[in-house]
Every structure is written in structure tokens, then in C-alpha cells.
Length: 417
Image 1 (cartoon, rainbow, N blue to C red):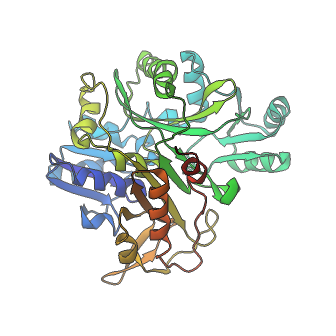
Image 2: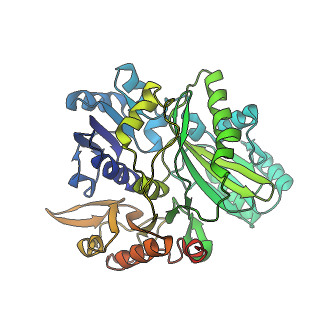
């Protein structure tokens, strides 16, 4: 199988890495890719939001599977254009991707499907926002109704900050706050059937102790030793399958990856959000543990072939990923500084580096080119060992002004055994 992966971040590097170890995948391509991805795939410079450009590239290289990594091409309808040309694609069509592209639409679908979630109001005016904030009370939760690269949510006790975020976004969804830990669950869907992956947990706040602004994610880990044993089965029964059925009823057959963001509240699990693609950085740890060859799985989501798959196979042990962020992230991150120590980090047993926001500097050197610059993944028999290896590796990397959280998976690792 020849595969093309769209995107150039850490999630796409993780996808390329797991595809490269699939014996059924004979050729790998990426657009635009990044310096780390180029070790396993041929990179192509195209506009990934242009369905025609993507289709022409896929046809030229003879792609038998196109994997759409980021959300923006999905919402732009790139999957639609590929399917019209008969090219298998992993990712929902434009209409189905509205589950991520519009928070208000997702809430509408959840309500119709009877999916447990936070009470909410869609707001377009300051008056509507004020009324919703008053109704739900603090902590205030305000979400951009459109795409925001994982940073469109403000959770705050400060009402003026919540109102300011709403003004900046224009159209928002205001929700009641959901208590309890959050969990990410990825589900492979083919329009009718759905197969869950391992649950993971990510860390959205920029600094230790869940302090600072919301980010696209500063780290993640799997498995979750504290999660209820029946969690995944319950989520599939009460949240995923009803949503898939409701989407089909609306004529929006859902094919691809359904990301279910959960809050395990005192009243039971609730959906925080749906996304139409792998979460980043949770994908980096979940894909690391996957033992089932991934190429045919992703292709089956397009062909309706997931019905015969009851469950996936997973490697034993644990994985922890840490995000090395650029100075000033998540505001206006500093770019263009040299990144060194990558070979030393990759030399740590059970650890490796995924590129997220990097670019070439000259022939061989690497420079920063984004807010989240690198993902460092540690693996091991236990979360404690995986965590130890990840921190050993990230400590060997040098990037002026960069930072990372020091408490990723700390509580979970301490609670093992």
C-alpha cells in the first residue's frame, strides 16, 4: 500500500512512524511533512487545504490511502474531493467534520442523539453571552464556535476574561463547567461500525500544576491505571454509537476518526467535545502502543470494513509524551532558533523524538518553526519508567527560551501498583 499523510506536526510524525512499521505499507509520502518525517517519508510542498492539489498529488504518486491529519483540510472538504476521485481516504467528509468545525452543531447532534454532555447555549451577541454566563456561573467555559487549533476554549473564574474571549471570537458556545478528570478516547469509524482505541489523558494548561493559559496540549500518557474498567464500553454504548447513528440519519455518514473528549464528572462521564481527527499529543502515545497493523485499519474506515474487527491489539507497557514548547507559547512563539541535542535524546533507551514545529536550517541543522516544537516520547513496562525515559531524553535537547511541564503523568505513575 502507498500512503500519503497530510500535515506536518507531531501527530503526523507519529502517524508516519506507525505506518512505517506496518509491513503492508510499501511507500510513504507526506505533505508538507517536516524534517523528522523526512526520515521515513518523501515530503511534498502543496497547499493541503486545496482538495484539487491534494488529489493531483495522490494520483501522481499512486496513493492507495490518504490520511488527513489536521482538522482544517477536513472542514474544507478535502476528503470529499478525494472520494469523488475514488481515492481511499481516512477522514470524514466536510458535512460530517462539522462535529469539530462547529461546537453548536456538535451540541445539536448530541442533544438529538441523547448523548450526555454539558448544558450549553450558542451565543452571537454580548447580551446572550452575559445571560449564559449568569445562568451557568463560574468557572466560566467559553468556546469558539469554529476551529481554533485546540486553543479556542477559555475556562476561568474571571467573568471579564470570559466576556473578552467571547468578544474576540464573535460566535461562541457558553457551557456549564464539568468537574472531574478529562480523558481522550479515539474511535475508528466506517459510517456504521466503530472500534475504540486506548484511552489517554492530555494536559492542556501551559505550566505545572495545571496553571497558565490553555494550549494545544503539553503532554499525554497511556494507559490510565485509575480509569474505571468499564469506561470504554460505556462511552461506546452511550456516546459513540448514538452519535454515529444520528449522523447517518442526517445523511452525514461518519467515516474516519472520532475523537471523544470526556469529563469523568461526579454524575458520570460527559462529552466535553468531539473532534474529527486524532488529538495531539494524545495520538503520539496511543499510536506508540498499537500492535495491529494500521494501514488496513485506516483504509477499512473508508470502505466500510471495520465490522469484522472486534478489538485491536496493543503492545504491553506504557508511553508518555512531553511537549517542548517555544518561548512565548501559546501566545506569539519565538521561531527560527537552532535546536540541538536530538541525537542524544534519541539515544536514550525506550525514548524517541517526534518533530512538531521544526524546519531545516541549512543542509542538516534544525530550527524551531512553531509553538510546540518537539514531542519526546518515553516508553517502558510501567508509566514510571516511561516517564523517567521521556524526561531523561527531553533534558538533552537545547532550544533557547524553550520550556516543558515537569509533572506530566506524575500522579498516575505514583499511583501504579
